[in-house]
Image 1 (cartoon, rainbow, N blue to C red):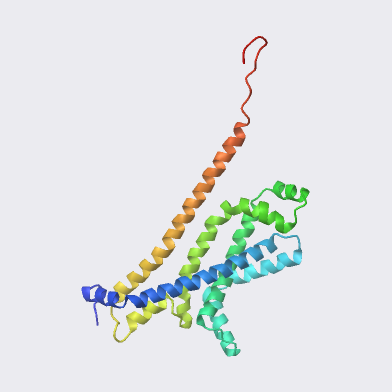
Image 2 (image 1 turned 60 degrees about the vertical axis):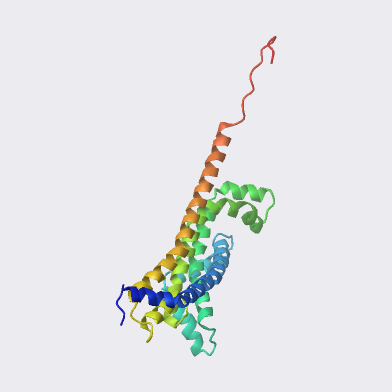
Length: 249
């Protein structure tokens, strides 16, 4: 068995680098589809939770509370094994996409709800006075203003979703964690535990860290733009110089 940090262990990891790259590709592709689903659900239930129809607000509240207060592993196992026993198997990857999308969709719904509620009520009243419908209010006025509130926690959810793809290991997925575990326990590749898990961690870091930095810079640019706008409005129009009678302008 290879020692944890010997040159032979690192050479073995390098020789089977395609295994790690395959796991990384599976993780990224699964995460991208799950992000799209999570955003769609978050936008839908975020709008429902701030709408005027009480029944729809209740539905959104139930969805958020149930999903947020049960673990992602339980939801993933239910999504996969329950459908298998019901003879409606949808596959490991599809089950992972659905479970991750539904789970993080609940958190994105709360993020969008908080962003909408952060906008002053005067903006809603002004939009209503102009004859905008609810969807038009959100699309043209409210949501564009709430981006600076929504963006940071939204990106945090994206990063968390990428990391939570590791839960696919529970149902035998082909994600990065699963491929790493198969590598370190394989008959011909086992033993290089240290280098394998270090490489796996670095791959996750290389994906998640730039996203966090990008969101931070984007948020800072939005804040700078807001400060400039406020400063320009506060300064008001430039006063005209008073010209006395007989004085040349």
